[in-house]
Length: 439
Image 1: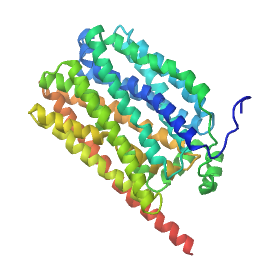
Image 2: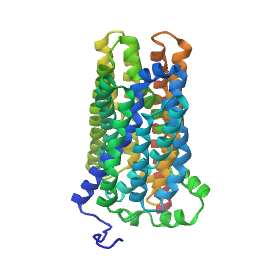
Image 3: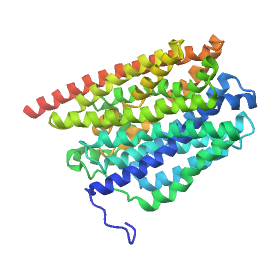
Image 4: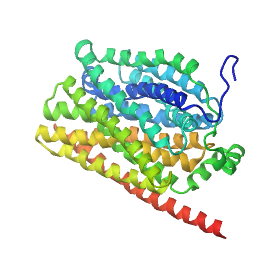
């Protein structure tokens, strides 16, 4: 503990916990801005650099996702062992500066390099944030806290597409990148000097005494094996990877879809996506986290089976409304379907991540979230974004991108099936634990 720093308590005050949540949500919002901004500028950047949809898909997806994935596990190990606040502050500085440097790109490869650095540094965001929050909020409040924290994705996307759309239209796409990087650079000192590192596992140390000891004594391979052996965890991880494949790919290509298919100006398309995936996406994420916590409290406390089942219903609604967005010809119907899809798009985060951190325990949370992020970014962000571009190129014509987005919705529904399997696995595990206790 640093001199002059207040003593840490295993149970921080509610007011301070909510203050930390606000700071971490602001930090993760810059993460969302810096990740999403490229989706707005694919069309003008592609024209300037003379890039095909396939190469644009590489810049939006693989250039970010592959390097994110390479950094995910090292960051997950570091998060479980070192000061998480310091890791996040350093990563925040790097991803913000790298986003600004994207505005200086002179072609495909210089943009690729800048996006790669953004991906590497942003790999630290989710494991540090969720691990810290899990030590500020107990299991009966975590879904709400994580749901609020994941407002950052929607808010970040809204800021990127509304403010970014105005900047692109008036000053060009390069200034949108530069403006996107500034908030994180300013916020980094606030995080470093304004947030205390919490006691690791302080909120639930008594519930996981054995796993706490095991996780600090085994190697990485054994820790991953132990993690994936815990009931339902592997299915939850696969579910998020599959859902991310559809959701991130869709949100990245929607601006292009609206411009090409419906002739919408870039600023108007950005505003519509900001309302759908920013405002309504944030509202949906908050509502789902609050609703599942309320349901659990009224049914006797947190139950991972009930929570996973709640989360499993959301991807099916997302896939159905996503298909409607690209199927309808009437613009009014397209907008209605997009608004509904946006509301559901991030709603699974609070319920599913609360199950993951509960099943993982305090000493494996960083690794668990890093495994999720590795798959979600390598396969979801990387392959999902590229997949839509490749399908668009293969189909051709103005509606090629619609076929790509529609195909990606299959992965979202597939994720919902894995959450149903997670529910079953956790229930079987609970029954086994009860039988063992009875013996």
